[in-house]
Length: 252
Image 1 (cartoon, rainbow, N blue to C red):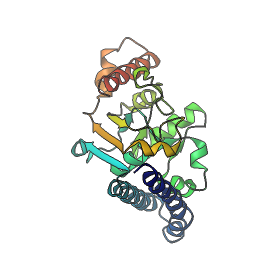
Image 2: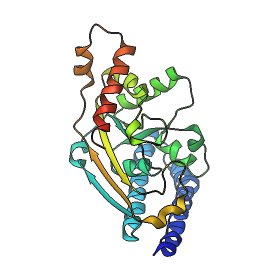
Image 3: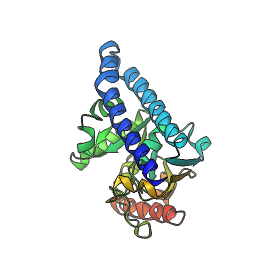
Image 4: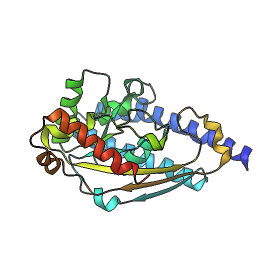
């Protein structure tokens, strides 16, 4: 089954790139021509993106490339203006999240946002580049959350290399503290070699990629802040990031 699995995986991952290019360069360009209301355009493009990612992942399950189990989707159905955080073991984590998180935007590397395969998707969906000055990023994220968007952030900043040494930066907690936005932590359990950092895609031959994502109860930023009322926001931000890092780490 190894060579057969590699063959199907090669086709499957190629389809993702071609599909993203089709959405970016054709579908969303046409939408932007006919829909002038930016909010309506964003809402529609996000729903198209989520549905496309769901179809892609379902196809992967049917082809026995993936085995996916997602728990706690009932908890997130009505989330608005919430920051979603999780560990980040694989390249496809953001695809999984966007497929199920409603009203989703995300903080992305500038290189991905300006990639021709993703540029149109990122623009219509109002994804936020992480390359600007910190103050501008925080303000853009704050505005997005106040508008009811759910912001997806992987606080490690890159894919997890060692799950026993999980290390969160405190950017997401600084954003949360600006308006006491709630945080929705999630745990990604991933088994497989492919799509990990520094691992060739063709290691798919070793077996099916297994994902189990669990959305936890929302975290009350305001309540946490009140526990440390004597401390400055920067200190509270670091304490919050550490607390949530440990919360997720113990559940991986």
